[in-house]
Image (cartoon, rainbow, N blue to C red; front, top):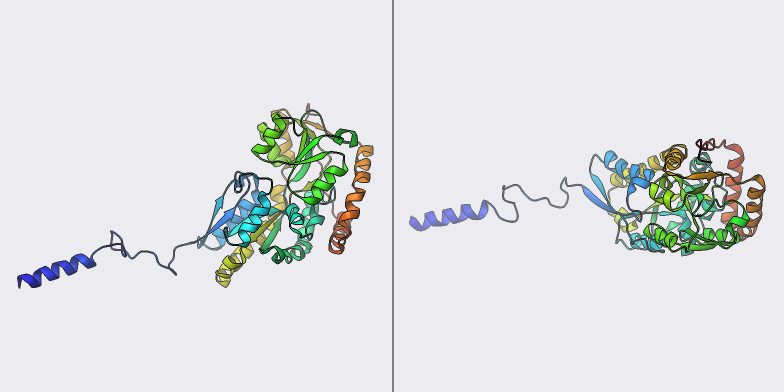
Length: 358
């Protein structure tokens, strides 16, 4: 009887706790449980506060899935290296990251020309036109080519119109561009446009851009007003050319094909619906130039406007760039479609330069 009692006690002890059930006796989460699926997203910026459409996508996924899918964001991914967007694409392609976003500008450096029309110089120059391009279905055609670089595209998002920002004075006509260093992102098309204006492109952004300004390596850079309104950038480069939009920042949401395949049809539908919703709202989310200009003005920015002669001269200098872009038949067709949309779309009003900031 004593031995039987000991065996009984030991049996109770062995089933009352342990690693498999946890200290409370509650079964540990297992595959197929109600635990949310966590997707990791590469973000080359310091945070999503500068990317309202991407932030909307992240929140919308969680909302549509009822918390069943949660996206964790890896900020400053790639440590601001000049090829960071290429790295994001490669890392998503092999599954090192589940999701990411990159500017459409980068794909021509990877042998994919489908997106070049979106950032052709001074072509897409309003938020209304960005929205029209997305609604036309043109960007869906572009996304279909992303399998060539090993990723799946979810959507193209409208972003800030990129203005020339000067450190020592406004950058308006050809004379202002001649011989300066100009900060930009990695893109064959954009680098060619900067060279066509007589400037030297420098692949710097984030803190590396600050270093390049401090060392006088660059005397200007391109940036959207939403980001530029930060007093840090105004102090470093206070001169904005208000009526020149070099190109928009348009971003692509990408996902690892293998990770996407691992999700159920319903989960894939949540991701796609969130991307569609973000794309549809992205132009409105990005259209903050009027408020941002006021904030930049208060921080010390000064705004100039290029003359009609300056604008015409810039167009002339960009002619060889367009000739090169239009050698690709698909790019030529997209450019023609965008020009046709431009004729039919009424752009939003240019932000009024605040008093005392001209």
